[in-house]
Length: 497
Image (cartoon, rainbow, N blue to C red):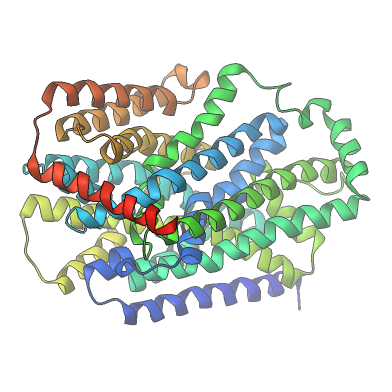
């Protein structure tokens, strides 16, 4: 059999496994709560790996290694910022959000939580937050589609558009069938594949080059500054990179996992599992890029046309074609895990948060599940159109969407959970200011100097605080829910001690 045949078999088996999980989950999904949140039944392992896999995406295996391959460890500040942000997100947001969303009318999406938290009877907050999700997730899902096209183009010399369609069809299929449960179970499989792949590739490449010492020497031959976090970095560059961690507090496809976990007690175990997975995976991605610099310097006969394909090309060179196929499937897994999560959150925004609010519909659960599946198809179609012209790097598309969510939702989520005097009006204007700031800053020359998430997050926070102070009026129902959330968390802590 040819090399490509082995690889196609491995990837084909992976695709069949994903579809099988979708069919299994389809049988377990009977209502909208099941489809959108898996009935709040996720265990710590599933929650942790699902959050990690839906978070890291193609960025982990393609975007980050590509950036470090070009610029060295100066780009590693992004990984540091993300690790810190993810840890804080699990530590301070996960337990409180899991509790508050249950107390506040069993909210199943972030917009519905905000609506229920502030008792905003006009529904404007729910509609605007749903619209922000729709707009920015279009960019985010498009980045996954672009990554799928680049993957098949780099690995098999497929037409870019054919690769895009293959990834889109398989992802849409299992998301359409099984909803949140399918997405979460596939995330566990995909997260495990990504984790193992990021250990195997740099380890094998280092062994091939003759060990750690020889690898370091080869990297320094290319550029002595590649192994320095500071040599090629600027102060604003470091701030911008570390600021990626701020984005975690506002990523709907990640924090929805906190809402779905079985109990507050499980968040501690999930945090330990999730952060361990993440740190090792990030180190693996960084090492893949650095070892790639050494490998292609020592072996000029191999060509790396696209730096974002360094993991793909190393895997194909170093391993038997079938094992290489499994490693390639790990890249597909990274892409699909994030796209599926984003499609689900976006469809929930369209149906649960915009359709229900605008039309005040009281349809059956079966109808809402059907509408959610139709929304998945619609959003996928729009994302494919956006991705059809490959006009940006994967990291560029992801960074813009990450900033949009981080600035629009991060301050709102944090303040709504921890400051009882946050108001719906403050949350609304803070969200709007954060989203618009990211959009304007990101498309201006200022983005070359400072990541748009920084001004967006700061301005959003200021607006929420100022407007909330000006518009705060005690609401007995809001106060009661806030106090009940605090009480449940204290009871949980006292029960642990």
